[in-house]
Figure 1 (tube, rainbow, N blue to C red):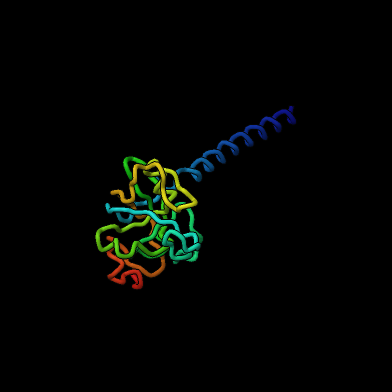
Figure 2 (cartoon, rainbow, N blue to C red):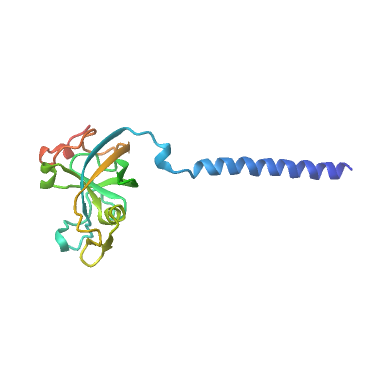
Length: 175
């Protein structure tokens, strides 16, 4: 009888431990964008880029952060490198991190964020063309109005807050 009681207790203890672990594991895998607090919000016009280091299609080489070009990378004319957040376009939400500088001159015309071409294609319903580094099938969209949410400011040089044109040199300042 004692051995039966011991096995039963062990089974109950195991079941409750597994249940507790399930709750903890579920919370740890929740969508990180919904868990992070919005530090700054705004709207701007976004363009797209893809710098693969080949020099074709006007790319300038590897990104300023030293991280390889990848989906989710954005270029900002002023935000600190490695700033994180997400953009929203027509109800679609996509994460980004600032891994490069840009857009250059277009930022003087209000285009304050360069999204990687793969993210831009997903937002606009197009397809990234790896041969041309352009987007096909999105109706020719090269600029879109987006909302952005900053969830983490990067530690590098740059200006927190509303993005400002590349020509201001804010990318080289601290804070």
